[in-house]
Every structure is written in structure tokens, then in C-alpha cells.
Length: 464
Ligand code: SAH
Ligand code: SF4
Ligand code: F3S
Image (cartoon, rainbow, N blue to C red; front, side):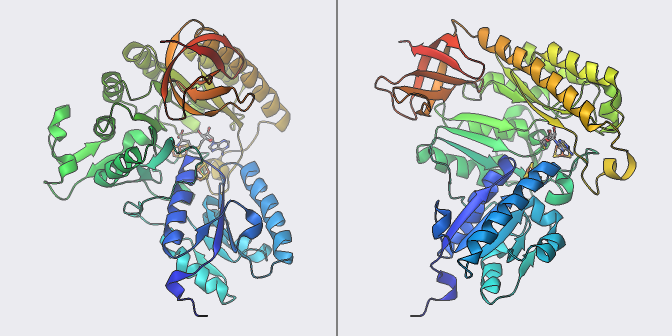
């Protein structure tokens, strides 16, 4: 039997680690390979090809992947024809190491080279290693319609840009994802419309720094740009606030979220756009990293504690109902006890609804790795992280208790893990709400009055 190369019939299993960008990229990869005849499987044991989409943000993220590669090695022992590919950020960072030390790995493909996957897999079939980790200044995969790998079919990520130009001193992202580039707004809006037409009720526009989204059109007459005067702007560029507005206008029944905002770039214009459209969710993830101006400067974040607080006050004023979350990193080189106290006091000031909290992990090649000594001891990092986590638990509890008695519109996402008689969904503020199932279906919008809460969840009853 002859199977033409362009139409292979193999089963592909993709495992995804890291941030939302990787989740979205895996869907692009699935689409590229499905075109070539690969069938996506959720069962690793029936896979002909295993791809692991990897993250390098902290050392423990990479350790997890090495652990997975050991597992794939075992599978491969009983199935020598299995192809294993490492893709994503760690592929970019550790190409040589993956190829040298890991006999398991057949192909290594960086985030900007996914269009080459079919030919690299073909190479692998001949017994050679396939490698491409070339970063691009242009690639946005704009024309590729991602295959959604999520189960609920309600909420999807839509990538609006790639890469990052910020060069925060601790961060590996600019090295593994290359320079920042914005995706053509027409392709973004078309993808969102398609999702809505397929029944999706929520999209999250994603990028490492969505506030610096900027599309420069070469063609004055692009329809997506034709109404750009709406925001009082002239010219050929389209900025994030305008993209957001266009996305919001697709349908009031489609919720729009976005992530991540950068404190140095988040403009009042974005906040006013959010205030204008009920379907743009009242939730902002605004990573602070530290509350100390001195540490922020060492991190090369481009803002001070006061600037950050000013951004928070703008949110509170323009969007009084907005929830705010953050990323906090503790134990950055040179962080003193005083700096740490400033982080805690900033957390109190903002009263975060939610935080992602990390210990600083030195990443090779970064400015911090080259110039700053990782001088906060592991014990001190752990103790400070515990204090940060404990404070956030109190703030999270406070935030949930403040919701008791309120009524929220909740988008139903699924059946509660704890009880088949209950559904769960999220409110505009991104808080999880659990409530009795009644006759509601996944994808419905339901008004829920909050009657109880746990540390992670709001619990309520439907109201008319
Ligand atoms: N672009 C986003 C976040 C990208 S990475 C932003 O700028 O906010 C997600 C989070 O991982 C960061 O906000 C930071 O808190 C954390 N992080 C990044 N590099 C890290 C490192 N070297 N060690 C520990 N945490 C890190
Ligand atoms: Fe990393 Fe900073 Fe870019 Fe975020 S903004 S991805 S932390 S360099
Ligand atoms: Fe990790 Fe790459 Fe995202 S390093 S956090 S998967 S951009």
C-alpha cells in the first residue's frame, strides 16, 4: 500500500506545558499536522508521534519536561517506531542538550518553525534527527486556523502577537520566543468570528504584552482598519484598545478577555474601552513582580512602585468592579527584607483577588544571570514565598467574602467536579462560581446570587 507523503495516516499526541501561548501554539501545531493527515489522539499509548510543547520560564518547569522525556523513553522501548518531538521554548533554549543527551528525541522544533514540522517528521522517519529552531521576525501563523484541543468548546485563546521586546532582566522569554510582532487584525477578528459561529462564548486575546499590540498597515484600505477613526485616531496603525473594541463588537454574547497587560504600557484608553463594553470582562492580570522600586529597576521592568499604584488607582476609578490579579516573584538578586516588606504592602494596597507567586529562578543568558548574583538563599526565598502565599490567601478570602450577596452573570463551563448536580462557570471577574444544575446547559449565561464561598470558589443560587 502506498501512502503519499503529503497524506500520512499517523496518530499524534500533544502534551502542553507552560503559558497560554503554548496552549494556543499546540492548536496551531495540531492544525498544521492535521492538514497532512495526522489524527489527533488523547491516548498516548496509541500515538505514532508524541510532541511535547515545553516551557523554560523557571528551572523546575524544565525539570518536569526531563521527567516526561524519561517516560517517553520507556514507551519507546516497547515501540521503537515511535517519534518523539520536543517543541516550544525549551526546544529553542536547549537544542544541543536535547539532541546530545536524550537519545529519545527525534525532532526539536522552536516556536517559530512549526510550519516545518511535517517535513521534519518525514526526516525523522528516515532515522535522521530533524531540527529547526530558527526564530522569525514575521511569523505569526496568522493564516492558520487552530484546531481547538480543549474539551468544553466554550472558551478559546486567540494569539494576537508573538515574542517580547521587553528584556526584563530575569526573563528567558525574549531569548526563546524572539522579537515582538503583532498579528494582522483581520485574521484575528476572523478567527474570533469563526469561534463565535461555532458556538464559543468567550475568547482570551493573548500575548506577552498585549498593551503593546500595534499593527502597522501597508494598505490604507484594509477593511479592519477602515473605522480606525472611531477612537479619534488617524493613521494606519491599530493599537490594542482598538483591537479590543473591534473584538467586543462581534457580539454582545461573546465575552472578551485578554492577558497579559504590562504595567508600564497599560493605558487609560484600554480601561475606557473595557468600561464601554459589557462583554469585555472586568478582570485585569497586571503582573507587579515586586513592590520595591529598587528591585523593579534591577528587574528592568520599566516602572516604579508609585507608577504601578497609579495604574491600580486608574483601574479602581474607571472600572470599579474589576478584579485584579498579579504575578509576584520573590528572592530576586539583592532583594532585602525591606524590599520584601514593600512587596507585601503593595499586595495589601492592591488587595489582589488572585496571584501567581514564584521564587526567582536564574535563567542562563539573561541579564540577571550575567550580571547579578543569585544571592538570596533558598531558605529565605522559601520563607518569603510562604509569607506572600499566606497573605494572598487572606486577600483571596477577603475578595470572595466581599462577593456574598452579589448577583453575577456566569457563563456555564461544565459540571462541578465535586457534584454532578452542580455546574460551574466564571463571572466577569474570572472567579469560579458553583451553583445547582437545574435545567441549565453548558454555554448558557445564568444570573447567580452568591450565598457562600470557599477559599477558591463562590457558591450561589440562580436568580430570575
Ligand atoms: N509577559 C508576562 C509574563 C511572562 S512569564 C509579563 O511580563 O508579565 C510569567 C511569570 O513568570 C512572570 O510574570 C514572572 O512572575 C515569572 N517569571 C519569569 N521569569 C522568571 C524567573 N526567571 N524566575 C521566576 N519566575 C519568573
Ligand atoms: Fe518576560 Fe518581561 Fe517579556 Fe514578560 S514582559 S515575557 S516578564 S521579558
Ligand atoms: Fe514558558 Fe515559553 Fe510561555 S518559556 S511561560 S511557555 S513563552
